[in-house]
Image (cartoon, rainbow, N blue to C red):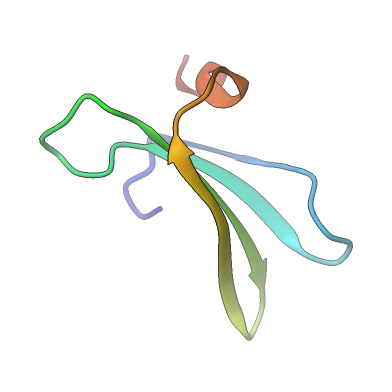
Length: 62
């Protein structure tokens, strides 16, 4: 999430800030991941979705 190439808000639970992040899992690959996280200050972050990048979020890289 710290090295995401793109990020965008997505619909989540009421009162939560939910964001999708798109980026490489490490610097030696061309592969992309999509990570969706819910932020609930001050308690922290809950990551509930991680997978190879799908067409649903590929547009965020353009």
